[in-house]
Length: 181
Image (cartoon, rainbow, N blue to C red; front, side, top):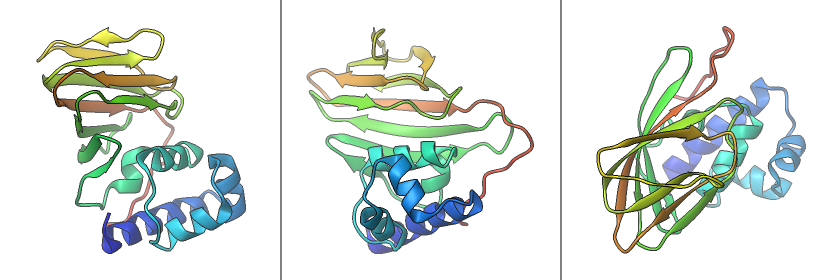
């Protein structure tokens, strides 16, 4: 990620952390990060992984998309590229992502916010996906929905896989998530 994107990500994290009344130390501890690493992320330094951003989103009880909403680029690591396409503003919240996975990639995802589901459609390639204890072989153009508030994973075959991912968060009270514009 380039400097402006990292700066925007850091400001989003800091704004949400402060709105939740969390200290830098507490959020770092809860997310399993060193305080110095979280401080660098909030200052727009470093290069956080997708997993680090997801852990921060879970600890802030906010959709992943709220942390990367103002990023106008793809976030990626270890053969996985993810791009936020759109965010719904209704309740429940729905975020839509494009994801591309390199051949022979295994991506283990930690549980997301309680009540979160993922609905994925395979656009091209080969992909096993779903809850870690119930992976399904996806067919191109077919939809698969699974609980994302438990460990889940994605495994590609011999070619790149492209996926459209819709993440639906649990219905909330009247609280709204704020992001940097």
